[in-house]
Structure formats: structure tokens, C-alpha cells
Length: 190
Image (cartoon, rainbow, N blue to C red):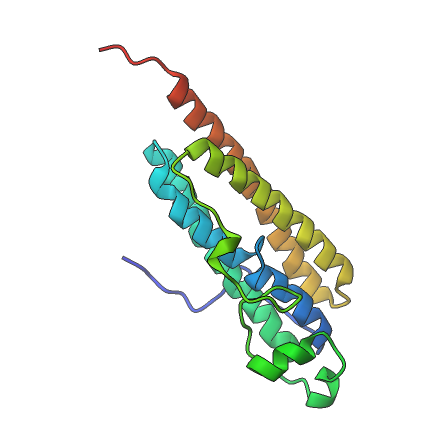
């Protein structure tokens, strides 16, 4: 059923030790518009989709979001794995370190732990797809902010790749919305 390849969807290269940047990137690891929220949102919403194509798109994108979650976790880990405590003290990562050490934990940049209240799933496929499009745009905007905060070329490269995937997902959800609307608008003749 699954073939596991021991590599990320996109290679991660981190050239610096930067606990403050790691904390900011945690927004995409456990924030409401981050990769974990997106993956769970789409994999939950797929059940209410009225066509197999729509179900497949939500399954594919939801699975890809979990691969992106792994990329984000790798970025965070590589930014702090060799950080001495003296480089952590006084940074936004200090509070995270007190609870979790250097290990990534799904939380926002402000330290709020991930919660299922960050996502929504309705029986209405139109409502779900519109929410999904908005989620992709918010994730894109977050990546753009993180890119501005990054001073590490390797991190910036990875964040840029993830930003581009958000744009593609937005487009795919727009296509899926059209497909679902057309199905709901067609008259059935028996």
C-alpha cells in the first residue's frame, strides 16, 4: 500500500543556528493556518465531497500537507539541534525550550498548542472548499512573512518552495469548487 522513501518531498538545508527563527516557523508546524491543521482539515472534509474527483483532490492535498509538516519540523529541528542554551536564552524559543527542549512541538509562534478548534469540517462541500481556499491564502501569507524574517538562504529556499505549493493548492481547490458547483447545479433526469 505504501512505499516509504527516507527523504523529504523537498530537501531542507539549514546553514545557521537560529532559535528565534525556529520559534517563528513553528507557526506553520502547529498554527491554525499551518501544515498540520491543513492536513487534518482536508483529510476530514474529504468525506463530504460529492464526487470521487473532489474526494481524491482533498486526499492528495491533505497527504501532501502532512509531508510539508515533516519539512517544517525538520527546519525547526535543524535550526536548534546544536543550539547551546546560551543561544536560546532571551529568544522567543526560550519558553518552548522550557517545555519541550529542542524538539518541535505543534504550537503557534506565540506558544499556543495545536488544537482541533483550529480546523472546521461541515457537511456542506461548498463551505469546506471556500474555507480551504482561504486557508491556503493565509498559509501563503504566513510563508511570505517567514521569508522576510529569514536570514538563512537554505531556510528561505525551503519556505519559498512551501509558499509556491500553497498557491498550487489554492488553484486546485478553486478547480474543485467549480466541479462541485457544476455537479450540484446539474439537473437530474430519470
